[in-house]
Length: 147
Image 1 (cartoon, rainbow, N blue to C red):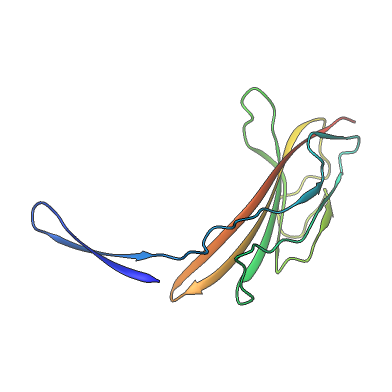
Image 2 (image 1 turned 90 degrees about the vertical axis):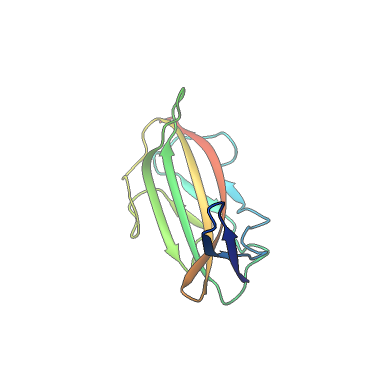
């Protein structure tokens, strides 16, 4: 619910603030990625990623769902974020995707030799008055391209 908090400062000034408390804002599960397997090495720059469609245990049918997939180059020693590919879907139905051109994201035609990390994030959102409340669940998976 939505709660009003009244705070009185040392100087006597009163401050009002609103606080939103919901028990289902965090997902208690995460998406399951089948490919790449942990530490998998691909011999193609266009690997096919596979996962299971995900709904959090807290999901309500009135919520809107989104899927964001991203691949970043991830080289030691600093493992800096270097986005190479991403794609997002509203009302997702995808359970696999081959790296290459996308219709909703940043795309590279092919990944080069190196270490990468896949991020697969599902979002579930609903409105609470004028507020948009969201819950995210994400899985991260490292893999290597060796052509």
